[in-house]
Length: 371
Length: 91
Image (tube, rainbow over all chains, first blue to last red; front, side, top):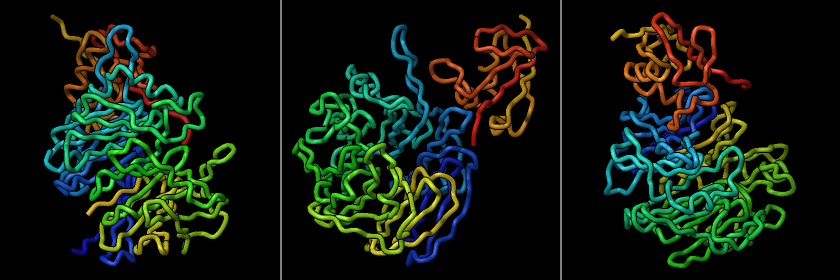
C-alpha cells in the first residue's frame, strides 16, 4: 500500500514536519510546533498510529514528554515525566537532564514505551506515555556507575532502546559512553555486549564496558542481526554470537568508518546506510573533506558504495547526528537525513540521488518517519 | 490555622501552565509549600523548576520579595511576593 510518509524534524528550537506526495517527489514543510522548545525525539506508535510521543525541554525548564493522540495535531504534557527515584542519603544524586530517546515497547504490549535519558537512565511507561517509572534493574544496577565512568562532562546518555519482536523481555540498550547492554528478563538484569568493539580512548581497550555506541539498530525481520555505528568504527553482530565484527574495515580508508547514524533497509537485513564524518585529529565531526556522502552496503558490510548524487560537491561541512537519519517503509524505501545546519535531504530511491527538501531550519537533532 | 497567601509572578516560559496568567495566587508557609500548591493548581509546573532530588534547576531563580533564595524551606508570610525567574544566556 502506498502511504504518504511524514517526517518529523526535531530541532533545538521546535518541531517541524514534512509531508510528501505518494511518489515522495514534493515535500511540504509545516510548523513549527512547540517553537523555542528543545526537541530531541518525536516517535510514532505503530501499534496505535494516532499516538506520538515527543521528548522536550526548554533552555530554562526541566525535561518532559508531550503526547499526541491525533497524529501530532495537538500535544499534551505527560502527567508524570521520567524522573529518577529520590536518592538515599550518601547515594549519587541523579536528576534527568534530557529525555533523549523514545521507543514503543513490544507489539503485544500496547501502551508500553521506553525512554532513555541523560544521565543514563531507562524509564518505562505502561499507559502510552502518560506516566513513567524508572527501570530499577538498570538505573539501580550495582555496576551502573562503573559502566558509565567515561561519560562526558555534559552527561552520558542512554539511547537505541530495542525490544526483540519475538520476546518482549529481550531488550538491548546503548549508552554513550558505556556500551551496549542486553537484558533477557524485561530489564531486571543486564550484561554488557561489547566484545570485538574498539575503545581507542580507554586505558584498557579490552574492558567489557566503557564503549561509545553512537547508534545501534536491530533489523525488524532478522532480530538476531544488529548494526552499530560506534565512536570507534562500524560493526555488525549476528546473535547468538557475542562478538561484534568491524564491518567498517571495508570502507575506503580516506573516508573511515566514524559517524553517528546507521539506518537499516526495512525489507533487507543486508542493506544499511551510514553518513561518515571526520573523526580524525580534533574530531571535526563534519562530512569528510566537506564533501558529504552517504555510504550504503548491500551485503551486510562486506563492501560499501558511495551515494552522493545531488549532494553538494564541496564546501559543505555537514554534521548528521545519531537520530537524524531514517528510512521509510515503502517497497523502494526513501532515505532521509537532517543536518545540524538545518537542512533536510531526502532520496526516494534508496540513496541513489538526493534532494534538499527543507533548509534554514534550526539545528536538527532527529528525523523520524510516520505514516 | 492561618493560611499564608502570596502573589506569584510567573515567567513567560511557565505561562503555558497558568493559561497565560502573569500573576497567580498560591498558599503556603514556606517556599516548598507554595510550590506544592502551584503544582496542585497547575499540574507539572513544579517539575519543570525543581528536579526529582528537590534541587532548583540550573536556569531557574526564585526570589521572595527582593531576596533571591535557594532554600526551599524558606518561610513565607501572607503578602509576600514570589518571583519565578528564568535565567539563560546565549541563543
